[in-house]
Amino acid sequence: MSKYENLLPRFLRYVQIETQSDPTSMTTPSTESQIEFALILKEELEALGMSDVLYNESNGFVMATLPANTEKEVPSIGFIAHLDTADFNAVDVKPQIIENYDGQSTIPLDQAGKYTLNVKDFPNLKNYKGQTLITTDGSTLLGADDKSGIAEIMTAMEILLNHPEIEHGKIKVAFGPDEEIGVGANKFDVDQFAVDFAYTMDGGPVGELQYETFNAAQADVTIHGKNVHPGTAKNTLINALTLAIEFNNALPADEVPEKTEGSEGFFHLMNLAGNPEEATFSIIIRDHDREKFAERKALVLAIQEEINRRFDEERVVIDLNDNYYNMKEVIEKDMSIVELAKNAMLELGIEPLIEPVRGGTDGSKISFMGIPTPNIFAGGENMHGRFEFVALESMEKATDVIVKIAELNAK
Image (cartoon, rainbow, N blue to C red):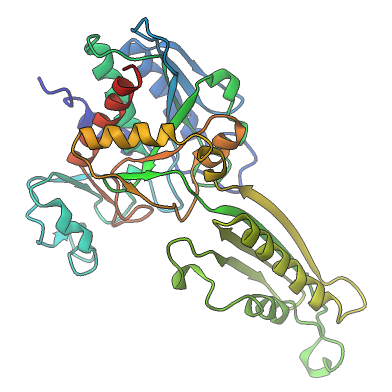
């Protein structure tokens, strides 16, 4: 019997449960489906034999404990993954399994052949020769972000429970809501979780190990215009849409997501709606460097001031809020937890890929709450859309990394 016997069935079952989060919701979790999924996981954790299994209604997290089986005094570890999926159709997910992929063939997703996974558009497919791929049917996302992480953590706990000869300290797991809309960790209860350090299983391809994220903020902008008939508009009309365009154009044209990479920061116009009377838009602000991050926010406010100066009343109103900070500031104070994950990968023959995240994870916030929490690969590729896929072998390797971290931590 393979130690991974339940990994694929778990994953396939999880992705068929719709759990998209809702940024307009005022509840936690933001959608009822996430609560339903959390309660399913609670039952599964109990069936596995985990201890202290609970669902926290105030924050939407389900947590459980695997007690230590060693008499050594070793740090306690947490493993975290998120319940929700991104802003793309997630209703009626129909996963497809392609066994022994040859690394070059085009994979049709839908029956009509409108959507395909092909090496020209997705050269990363070449990395999966001989492996088992799980894809979408072209009409939905897959949900490997982050249901692969949940399935891997579940399977790793099952392996440790079935193999008591593997010594480990106390391990806690947590599955929580609303990571994709950036608010899931806001109510995370670090005292309830009570571990020395943790890892989110929420990265991409095999080997990813990340402890540096963006600093992030969002500017929600409202522009109040003055609308009159265009035939008599001279010296009277103040077009809110025109001012919105002017505002965006005042930002550096090359400092946008489509023109930056690596550790380069950016401004990103997320939406724009309105009419000459009133316009609203949102800009997200990202930078790995805290000083440059502050300069970017200051620039947004300076543009607001410059436009407002031309009028006899405030026309541009901004609600500017920080979302999360670069967890490197916390984790670099003690890099032993990064080294632990790195050594676990090396012992398993996995080359660690340590690079900054061009985004954020729940670990960004949890690290600043007091639990240093780097991010480890979960295996998914092309996430947040119809071309998402994951290899079974990648999920097996992520499962092995969790087990190996627990093992090395107890030595």
